[in-house]
Length: 478
Image (cartoon, rainbow, N blue to C red; front, side, top):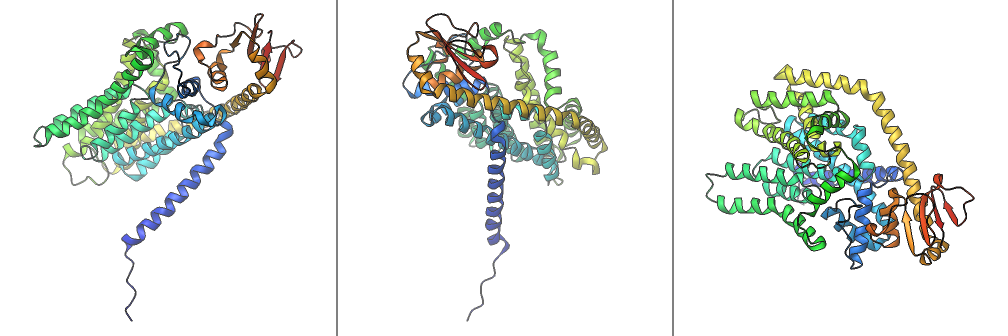
């Protein structure tokens, strides 16, 4: 009788991996369940869901209207896919996907930190990103900047790990990111140009460069086609955003560039981490990178991952400056990519003490700053969660109000409906209307022949024709 075959460590590895994946999936489900009461959606997300309902019904929304946000192709497409679920369920699924995007962002931070400084640097980068209150706020409110940054960070990690071998995968992720925010177009173009130069002696250069160029230009072409088909103007997103910036009086223009850049980095990661990232990146480029497992490589090879991440910081900052030059709105959300790239560079200083004290000292000082700010960060996060929970509850109140049979009956008898600005997109999705066709309410009470959706704190409890559900009230004068 033959002896049983020995099980090699390689044969056991998939089962261990499967257990790890199951544990990670269980942790993700638990995190999502815990986070659900604190999740709410930003106006941009609500507009995407409302437009998705319109497109799924065969109606073309008025994307060019001055009183709506800028349409982004990928979120709108997601709104179309989620529309059969109904407004409430679609919003919940969108919120869950926002949690998943934040998880992908943490994974991207880990991969990028690991590519620069090894597993411990990756773990530190993950912790630093996860504990930034401003990023937690963006994730809890479903801002598209979180999935955008997640896709860019994972793409950067792939490029840093194997700059040329994983180029198509990295560019594919940047193409998806380019359907969320146009800053990815420039990143894809720069990476494609660098690859074309790196392959200058490759016999397959024409074919390979053709592939990367096709991926690099795919996102802007799809976005312009989206604007052309649905609005008749291939550059609507650019011109429309400029016009809305003036209407909303948001910071814009070159005069606001430095103040917004300074405050944005401070709000996102803090100046100590940003400074440590600058020191680590500059030191690695000057002295040769010290990434994991590359001790036998030459200095030029060791510099490449750091050079790519430093280029990501510079390109992201240049994109922010381009927004100022184009007189487009400046917001700290648009600095997430360069801020997180700096955090990853700072974390890469962790294992470098055995080679140089400079990056390690910069990181140490930054971590002292993070530790000193931790109580304030905790209070800011707690306040954010409390506000988000109240907003989540108010969203449910609005859904219950608009689903009441008596309110629906009264709406059918009204010539018009005016809506509080913060609820326009959510009301549009619930009633399957174009948000641009719902005028903003000038006050809590409508004119004769109209109905109004107003916040309950602005409507007297004994107002005639008022139906109150928690934070929201419908008032009819029809």
